[in-house]
Length: 457
Image 1 (tube, one colour):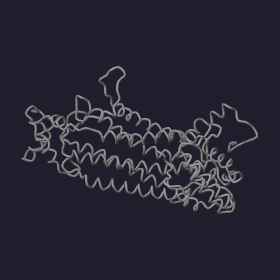
Image 2 (cartoon, rainbow, N blue to C red; image 1 turned 45 degrees about the vertical axis):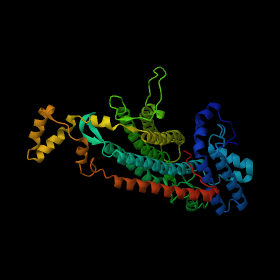
Image 3 (cartoon, rainbow, N blue to C red; image 1 turned 60 degrees about the horizontal axis):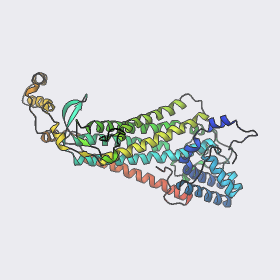
Image 4 (cartoon, rainbow, N blue to C red; image 1 turned 30 degrees about the vertical axis):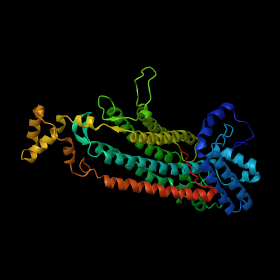
């Protein structure tokens, strides 16, 4: 099919390669979203008399066929197509003729791309929120199982105060929960339809933007058509910022596990099936997955920065620069999805060595406890602190389990508040399920196919 912007000349081959880049590959992720949005748009065109009922039926059938092909990995997009939008329109035109040529009426490729991305990002944010919640739940289960297993707490990487495996795991659970909540909140911002904004200024057709938004399951229309286009790149950056926080937490967890599974520590052991080997040293079982988790975290951060750098000084309205925000969006979101998945799998196979953890609780770990015991008996903190600091060799080991159970302030080792954490995480997961069900219902209403989802991770 000819390009959507076809002129009376052929584009220079280098210019074509430069402008298309790898968009036609990236756009496989947007095929289903674009088809769903195109069905809604076609219904809107039929509603104002531009498409007949027969044309609408044929377009809906053709777009549903493309969705099925994409689900099977069988819908092709070539460099000549430039992107999925041309490929989809070409498929429709070849299959059903004149109606395929009408589908773009009242729509710019800009709001077409925007709408497909919005559907995809809206769903991705909820799916990643759910997966992050499931990981938080797994960490809470781990914390419950090892709630009173002692573990040295560290500051500056040095022995500090008594802690527990339960406190360590629950800390990450609460952090991932908060980051999941950021995604849930962001989904409200994303849940507005830009369809009908065209190339930033609308069109002189009586398009019912609220009708098409409802068809796609959006709660509202993105009202101002110029803002709808100015938000391109900005919303992608918001998604990637949320991913960045999740990746930062995953990187910290990975670093802890690398340290604590070292033979010199021996607190935990990684599942062997998640460790790789050395090409020269036959004894090696390397934590490559955890090391790559650290580096992938920086990849996600760079993707977020890249998008913001691209859009930072752009003028209002559509600019071709926006095309280059798609690759970091897809790269960063996929890396984050895989990070959550692999770290959850690491946790599920983690072996806890209680004997090594307990033996690591050396006498100096209890120095602060001794100070505070003496304070409770009437001493002042400053003098007692100095005295114990000058006589550390006299500090005796305590019962590590009793010590962590004696800490009863909310959120400490003896009072982790796991039941409340569990409730919050469970409610978040249930909330994600409800939202995803509403999306599925909207998609099924559009294409009459069961179990359709825009994000195929």
